[in-house]
Length: 594
Image (cartoon, rainbow, N blue to C red; front, side, top):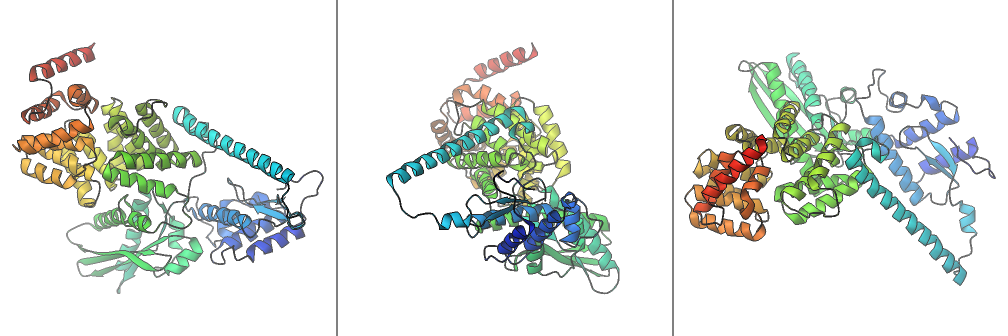
């Protein structure tokens, strides 16, 4: 509890209580919410000698009025503790920097510590305000030591990041600290109208939503206990002040004869504005009730929580003032995935490397960094010659992400893709199929899985998955429109292929132009094919001379690869002759069989 210098006694209980009141009465300490009650409770319990009782369960019951059935699935205590730590840190940086006593709540628990502050107010107030030559020398030496310390911290951070990639979760210190994410609470849906049916259906739909939404790992969803403690008509301001949730999902179910209508709305709790609302009408005699509830919950979850959904767009337009930069990295990652160009790739990589160094237990950031490393190799975006091979880093970071959070969809996507390009396509697709069962509504993952399945030769199944991703997210990544165009081409639907490749329009992405050249050639548009091929050669002059080996890296079947090469040849592009291509494939097959 105390860590006091030997020459000075620890703060007394009265001095600690005085400091507590100083903090709580400061304008730098938020008056709304439960932060004050939280800090006062843990302080008084510790002073009373009951620090051992300070667990999430006791805090939830005493501070947040949870029932005795409180479960660790409800993150309210962890989330509020993180917010309280940031508030305390801000307080001591501004209003409390000269306070005599420092109260902190170290990470990993809820027991506060009470220590003398580094700069007691009296010492600072009495310090002469003049600058001498000796003072300047002292200040320079002091700042020099500070600079060296900062450099040391940065070096250790970089080392921790590198060691984490190579050796796994245990190498970077604590694996329990993760950044705060956008927080959503689901109010119980209301049963509208007379009779018990609507209330019963509403309760079932709420349960389905509490299952579907937590599958999206870029947001935090409050647990069942929190949801059940709310009323269907809870005010957004009450949710914001009481729970600190950024978003409230609410709605109702109305039953009339054989018709059922579900209304849902997503509310920004900072101002009460409705960000999204929708109604769903169903015939009860046409579908089983459980199927209706599951289907509606999936549609709602996908609309608001997917990577390109309502919450992501809201945060991109208005990032939260207390964001630590990690969510910004995610938005940069998804912006990169939409554009696929080296400039945005570099920005996203730098941001994510910083994020995983600060939060080594955050699986989603490791997952995204894995995909960024992979693209460094497969697209030759911003290669780092002084690092381990990009493919090795991609697989290492993906395995780390899965070890931290085995059911994280983005982690499974990263592992699937890294395995695929590390010449393990069978294992890759097995991982992908398991992830699809776990979360069938994540459009970023659906598009990636559809792409991998298509390029492995199952063009129809890949097209079906890509169609699902595009239907659920028509404004999403152009990359998937490009792959869907290629699947249409390989399935000989040339009209659709041409229409889709023109819609994809990824001008800064080199392989876009190669795919476009194949599609236009197969459709008989040879002038357009040649133009796209020439653009591709300017961007990737090394590719066409080695096209057989490059296509093998993508796990294309020999017959599909030869067909694409022939299409480029018909467009007048300098690819190897058909005889040389066939000979190279025969040689590769013979080598693989040894």
